[in-house]
Image 1: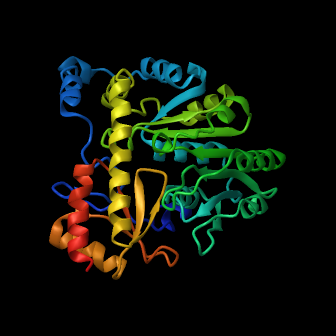
Image 2: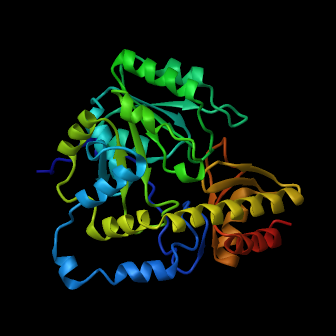
Length: 352
């Protein structure tokens, strides 16, 4: 007798991240190419003792510190094992099987992947050919069957952002049909405009943040959900008891205690981005500041070929697309000027 397999999971098509990236120059997954200062990392590692490793994770100390850091309360925040786990919890909690989740497209793939796994209907709102998105099209896509609306601000991969007036229209329309609005602010620290107040003041708004981008601990997996206490309560019911690990929580707490390091990370990556865009524009490249810690570049030659050559000949990883809208571009994560010089030297040598 054949064993049972959930049909939604059975029929989900997945493409998993590239493996074997150690030893490469990594500009393909919006990580910090160089990471946190070594002396900071070493100081935190000293606290990871055998006793520390025997104890189950206790997130409350970090949550209280993080709530204070963003001007909220403990009841407004919840940790998750990366923001992709937050996405799973939110779609499990507020999605209804067969009902709709509205996102723009293309966008972060874990939204449509989780829709497929959970049996939710993904409603993608496409970009225009000039890489803009019309807010009217998002509003029009929200129907009586919508349960969740997702806005990434800035969006990955294209990098568009929303005005406050646009956001309010989406929140109001979602509220009319009984849907929650997820605002994914993974790249908040590179684009400081935040819609945090709506998560704290409105009944149907949720903010996501991550420690994988600016805070540079993607290996540890830590995300944060920010919303009103009722929504946090419901998600906590769905959450695994020990979700975020203790090493991630320790690093995150220590990061928050080092505001000068945070500011230096922001300055360093902003300087690296400006340097990269200036060098590309001097050479006549079409490029796009995507507001996060990444940029779009249109190579002179086939984008996929250039990406493959960078990997095989220079050990430089960038992100190329099969998507028809984006197939002429590569996405490049940004870091310090030094890190970006390594990329630019390799890119200019090959794209001639």
